[in-house]
Image 1: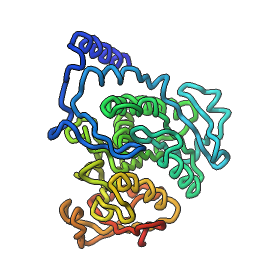
Image 2: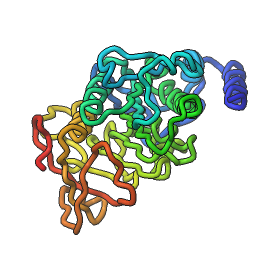
Image 3: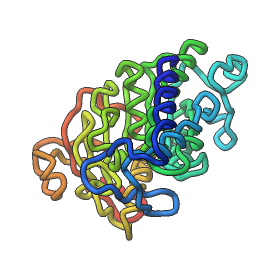
Length: 333
């Protein structure tokens, strides 16, 4: 933590010595401006890191700005906030160390009331009697894209510290955890797992963000957890294309989801697939020989696997194709 602060102070000192809005680095190969989607739809984002981006990111302090909200079957609608280190709040909450604990990490410009949180909280509590902890890092996720990307990393480090404290204070076991993240939150879920030494048993990355992550050292990777699963629903524009988990699912070829009129919808459709997979099951994927076969919806290799769901498919690996319906229920079986 002290080292992280020292590095950030050094960066600030460096940026203050530069001319106004000096370009520091190019975050991705390719065009400087690329599209990313927020709550209000597509937005052209600048992928050249500038001094203003660093200064904007510096306003975010996860120790102050991150909030953690517990939901259980005893409080499905109104959360119980449990700050890091608040042992009394934890003891007086509905947190049960013997239940599975699920962490939800939202994406860029999302809030506690965004679809990712509302749908997955309800779906998981319907499927299983679990502790659901919603990570509210909306202060860090607000604003321009590159500061939010930098904050993704810092928030992930804080969430890992929170989980370490939570287990120590409650007696809960990391072996009974599931972390789910969407877009920027998908990369953050991987960062959390990495800082927990890859020991989280199940991490689900829902359409991990593409802009700024093509060559990023902190991008989601298969070793971030014991079993890692990626769902690609807008591969190539808002979401990454290449496989990144132990298992990668490419519903409908990874883009252009049925029932969606634009790619913003496709990028978010994975949230609804995941929610339905928790409550109804289904989504049987067919193994693909390679990525090209998945992207072209031409998968006939031997073997099937269910996409999503509440339980890790530990030991499974590969690329899978799933065909979905245009409307709910989305699963074809």
